[in-house]
Image 1 (cartoon, rainbow, N blue to C red):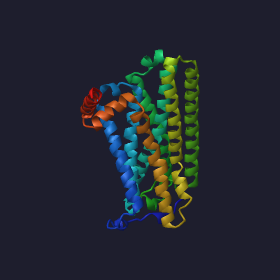
Image 2 (cartoon, helix red, strand yellow):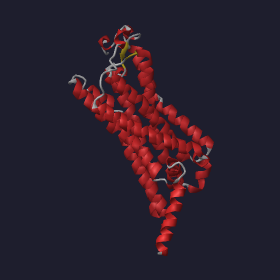
Image 3 (cartoon, rainbow, N blue to C red):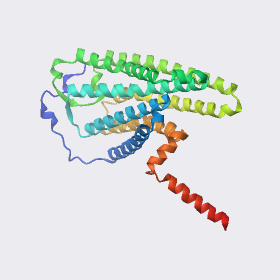
Image 4 (cartoon, rainbow, N blue to C red):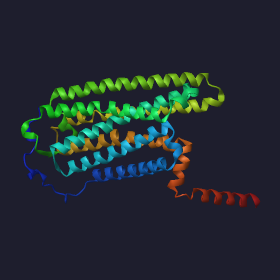
Length: 325
């Protein structure tokens, strides 16, 4: 069990120095998070403005990743800033925030697996796709994703509060996810759950890829382009899933360096945050925001404040003038 020395039994530990200047790593992190949130907000706005997107399963799942990743990025960034300023939070809200973050982290991989299954149904069972992809199915699918994503957070939360020292129950501490992994059995149990769920997700990815690849070989030349695009989408989701799963190892990577110099630990935290938190969540906008022609056209329209049509007409007029010369 973690010693009570990691906690403070009074609010005196709340004294922190906001006058501490931000270093270049924290500033870079805020810029990256700000860009990410702006892009995601634009995509969420695009999704909400068009009924056609809310009626297709793949766009609904895509929107869930946008909402979940945006919330995860925002709260994680707040914890990073709080850790930088050594802001001490009461242990009860801290445990709730850490549980919520673990839930959000778990949602994205399972949503990616659901998106791969949706592509499998669309390519391999096109005649049944409309019957399977209904509003009720989408609701049940989201509930299943949320339910499975709650397993690890609830295990961590219950395990923490069942064995936390009584002296720490009303204390203050700098809020980090590692606080929830007090005993070795908690970390090992969490690792076992991660391994089981990771294996389950890998099976889904491999299954859908093989099925779509078989369908691509048997498809006619007209449908082969669409099928090959779905294959590439599944591969991108697999890579994204790998990065998301690696994110689950963050607490263990950081725990291995707890006793090293503070500056080295801080550099490790920033590097891990950028590589395993920001990078995989930049792939969702790339996969559906840029590669999907239907969504990209609407996104471009709103990104340019509706002036994209004006620019197109001006370009056509200019080309006509050039041809007439």
